[in-house]
Each structure stands twice: as C-alpha cells, then as structure tokens.
Length: 267
Length: 267
Figure 1: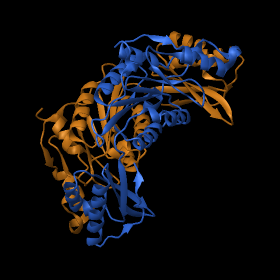
Figure 2: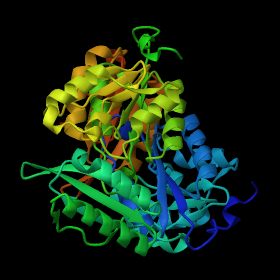
Figure 3: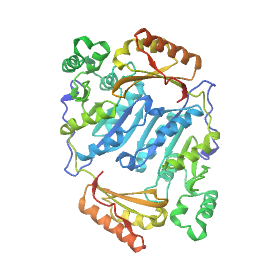
Figure 4: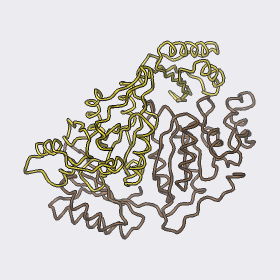
C-alpha cells in the first residue's frame, strides 16, 4: 500500500450502522499478571461516546510475528483497531516496527515527531533511545501526546497508543474528532435482590421479544445479599425503554422490587 | 472427535519446554467497560506456579460464531485454553453450547452435575434455569465448584471456568493437579530512579547477551520521581542471576543506585 494514511477513515454505511473496533493490548507484562490492564475499559467508554463499539480485544506478547498477525487479522475484520503499549524507547518496544511490517511500509524518522522530542528533552537531553520514539511507519499521521510529548500515530484504520494509562487517556481525548462513529450504545441497568436463576426463563422471553436490545444478566453480592443486575444496551432509545418496561413488569409480577440505580447512562 | 475428554492432557516435550496457554474472556460486559476483568492476572500467576505460560488472551463477545471461532483457533495454537464467563443460568450464558459446537459434540445433561445442583438448591428450589448449568458437552470432565456448586468442565485441552472471580479462583485451586506444566518462569525486578530512555541502549546490549532471559522495561512514578522497573524473566535460574548481575552493573556504572525491591518472586 503506497500511502495508507491517505485512505479515508471508514465511512459508516448508514447513521444507525454499528461502527466496530478491536483493541490490541501489547505487552508481556499484562500476560504475566505483573500489570493489570485498565486501558480496555477506558477505551470502551470513550469510544462508545463517539459511537464506536469494541467487538473484540486481544492481549498480544512482545513478539513480532504475534503482533503483525494480530494487527493484520483485526484491521481486516473491524472498522478500527486501537493498539496500546510498546512505543517507548527501550528494546522491548517493538510496536511501531511491527505496524510498519504489517502494512508493508518502511519505518522512518518523522521530522515533526523528532522536532517535538528535541524540544521536550532539550538538545542536551536528546539521545538515540529518545529519538527512536520519532520512528514511525511511512505514511503515518501523528497523534499528539500532551503529557510526555512522544507521539502515537494513525496508519490506515490502526491507531497506535501508549500503554501508560494517563498518557493514553490524554491522547484519546485529543483524538476523538478524528473518529467517525455510528449511534452510541445507550445502557440502562435494573438491579434487584434476586438470583439470576429465579428469573432466567421469563428474562429469556423478554430478550426474544426485544431483538434490538442486548440484555445481559450479572450476579452481585451486596451487604451479604445476592442480587442480579440486568443491563439493557441498544442504539435505539424507544426499544431500550420498551425492554426496560418489560423487565420491570417481570420483576414486579414476581413480587421483586427493583433497586433504584436504573438511571440512563452511557455504556 | 468421539470422546475428546479421553485425550490425554498435553505432554511437555521436555522438562524445560514451554507449556503454553491462551485465556478467552467471554462477555460483553468486559468489552463495554462495565466490568473490569481481573481473571487474566489471577490466571497468569496461578498457571505460572505449575509451569504454564499465557501466550495470548482474547476478550470475546457473547456471540456463538465469535466464541466458536476463537475456541477453535486457540485450542489448535496452544497447549491449553482457559475460558472465563458465560456458564451461568441465563440466556446470555452460551459458553457451554459454544464449546460443544466447537468440538462437534452434543450438549447433554450431565447426571453428576445435576445431582450436585439438586442437592445445592434442594428439590424445592431446583428449576429449569438452574438445571441448565448441568448441561455440558458430551465427553466433558467436570471441574468442581466449592463455592456455588455449578461446575465448570474440561473438554480436550479446553478448561471452562466461570466469570465471577472468587468462584473462578476457588475452582482453579482445585484444578492445578490436573495440569501438566513445564518449568515455571522465575522473575526478578530491579528498579531505579532513572528514566527508561537514559539506559535503553546499554539495556538492549544486556538483552542481546542473555537470550534465555526476557527483559522488560516499565516506567513508573513514585513520590513525584520518575523511575524504571526492569523485569527479568526466565525458566533458568543461573541465566536469570547473570542477567540481573549485568543490569545491576550497568546501573552502578552509570552512577544509578538500584532500589531494594529486587527479591526473587514468581511471575
């Protein structure tokens, strides 16, 4: 591909179409249990605000073949791919080189990124390891890093972000204008002190009657009492209201009073 | 496959061979950001104790095709697959049916699982939704659930576990005797108040000299000071000691004093 960054961002087929994404979490430290990932949950909520839905996530080890294969499988399968991790200055930061390999383009020193890094570190502090963070695939468009200056980048439908959560979060905030989403998923939660298995069969019937709403059932324990949270998610507000009404009627008909935490909220 | 559970557990090729695993985290609630996964980090540490190394993880949505495809891709690629989530009593719990589909065997009521559930819920409390948790793929071997009775199961090299962390943790503790691992990965961490980019180049040289050791570099901030943790991981104790010694020498040679948190630890 001669100039992947010149490809336009994916165009939703219709206003209500689902715009999909995959998150690739790159790093041995997540797979070893040393580091608890928190970026997936942040990205899920931030992307839903602009109407992009995460359909899959993968945690990939720091190995070129594993990263290249995952990038190529996921950029073909989803509208967007977001990678986290592996763009720092050390030998185990191989994400940028792997993205270049996945797209079949050279990795090259980006003059704008180099300029930013030379200002950030000063001419006295700049070194080869720091300048490595200015090496991005040919054709990539930079993503500004307002925290620590080393940029991320976009190539085609792949957005390359760092692993440190507070830096990733700042960069995603600045990125949203570049993303084209569909309708955000709206969510309503109805909770009650009942076990999942007490209401499972009538709940399945409600799900069957509301195909535009995805109903999830999640058990919880609160103050030593078993409870269930029923989460309704849909891009269609009227469909969501109808499903919530049927679930509330189901519970009340069974003599179960919903707990009041069912305000509408994103996600 | 007529009777997948009769396949022996994978046999490590040699004592020092890496025994690999993939974790499939099944559930829309993880992809939407509603629920923060904590099972991957737990499994990473627990499996490393018995010499099994997680090479990849995927978060998969509650859709049959997505689950079946992921199970079949990963059980062919790794020695073990561990799934979490989707084995409860509600309509969105489809993992057991998907595993049956992936293996091409029927889903059937397991008499031993049914007996356990009938005792747990009593004859007055048992219902169709609760009995659904006794439906497992033909040939599966049950995994005992000491917390809430509904069992998990093993089919071939795939181990099916619940999503609720305290239940998963109890089941994994009881499962370890059934797993055959290789040599556990040993880990040593050397931390210092220096930035990654100050030591990146000599650190890369240490990595090149110690191919049996995986060296990861992770920045941190502590008491408003920037620091770097260098994590060395290997199945070979002598190789690990040698790499740690070279890193300590690298730091001291640069006038940087390591912080004392470098005791040996698993993971």
